[in-house]
Image 1: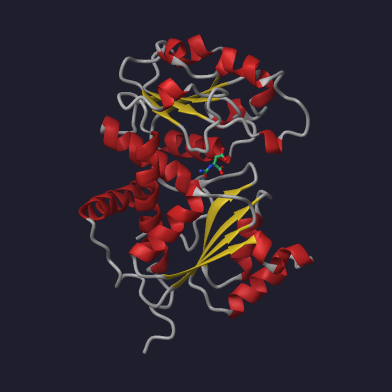
Image 2: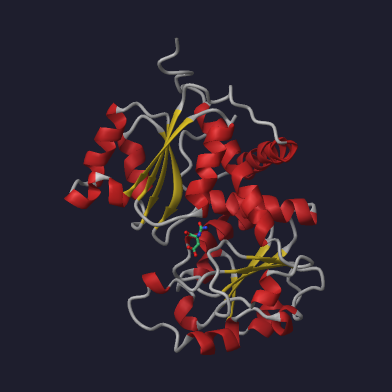
Length: 315
Ligand code: NCD
């Protein structure tokens, strides 16, 4: 039994809880590939996708996951809600609570916003990315992708490269991979590596050749210009020259190293198209497929958690 009501972060999750979620997601990969659905599982449940920040793949992925399990899915984005009219986050929470939704998927520009909502609503809250804090379902889908390809998570060397400073994906992955026994390295210019990196138990590199040496997995991150207050990188061209993943730099990693990216990609900035689209090395499309399965597992698990009412408004 998953011991939490919400999924707000990976930090603090026990390895068995992570393993259990990945195992359930694995079964959803098979279900999705067979073309079947399980629409009775979340029938009568309502899922609200509340997105205060833009998203294409994450929102679509949660929507598809909810629908494949039979939930009623409603998408609310900032532009169509009253947030633009000055309604506070807590007013929004009170409104949503009155609507009796069962599952609330939240993306917000401020770190900690989903945790605040979780204190105010009855629904199970799932963090779909908050500021620079965490993006737990992304780390779970990355872990599932790696585990399926490498057969394990324990004992692997995973290099997370680029704009680590602004990346909630990096933070969630550092916690998850660390908990499951992988060695995590972060590689980037000093301006894009958070000062607390070493205290998170990762090794820090500022040189791709050294950082990628012997890596089993190369995880690239998007250069998040929208979160950069000032120019932390000289130019996209310069960044690509030193930190962009191309065939030449990938050759420093193990010959069978996986190439990953959470998307959306800045082609030619942090990753070269030839590497991103190379079916022999890149598992970027598979990450998207795993995303739906992982979100089905998370929705299923939280909707059925102990103490949560079974079906509201049941006939
Ligand atoms: C990531 C995010 O939003 O944190 N993208 C995603 O979930 N697909 C990474 C990013 O925006 O670069």
